[in-house]
Amino acid sequence: MKEIRILDKSFREMITEEAIRMRIGELAEQMNNDLKNKDVVCLGILNGAFLFAADLFRRLEIPARISFVKLASYEGTRSSGTIKELIGWNEDIRGKTVVVLEDIVDTGHTLERIMAELVMRKASEIRIATAFYKPEAYRSNISLDYVGFEIPNDFVVGYGLDYDGYGRNLPSVYTLIH
Ligand code: XMP
Ligand code: MG
Image (cartoon, rainbow, N blue to C red; front, side, top):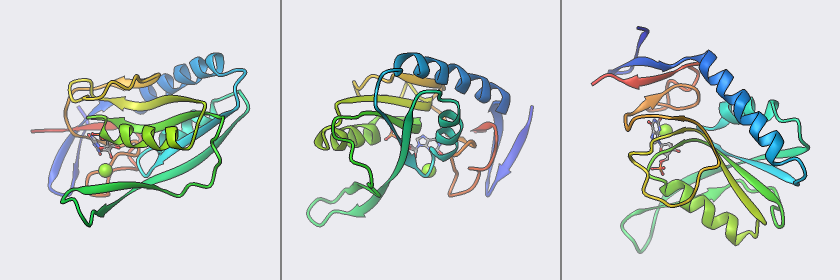
């Protein structure tokens, strides 16, 4: 069992680089079939999705474009909670088929926020692709079209996912050892 240490925590390898590579090939094949005749814009959500986006996008054989946005947190002036704003738009998605590329879907709150923005910007069709998904934590009813791996409700790092900024460069996915 491969174990690693990041800052004060230990993690155990859960999904290998090879398994990720193979699964992404399968997702790309599905997308190549499903999206053949669409005008596709992939929308990667930074920072976490950058590796997934690169690996998946490279295996698409349909005409497609890619763009990236980032969720920025700022303190709301009226509410006490943190509000998240999607920044970095440079693509007109009106009338386009947008495929959101996420690193991980947990509660689904982030996805709800992204979805609202895509609807507001008048995308004609929206599909969701995520490398990892935690079904036990999911609280939304947005359907996920392309899921790499369903994983338990534990904290993971690697393949773009971080612990306090570190671990994104790990080619495999590691789960926190309690
Ligand atoms: P929600 O709850 O909005 O969460 O679906 C999505 C965002 O939360 C982060 N997240 C994680 N990051 N390991 C991480 O490194 C995890 O296990 C994990 N679970 C959720 C991530 O930023 C994601 O976009
Ligand atoms: Mg993070």
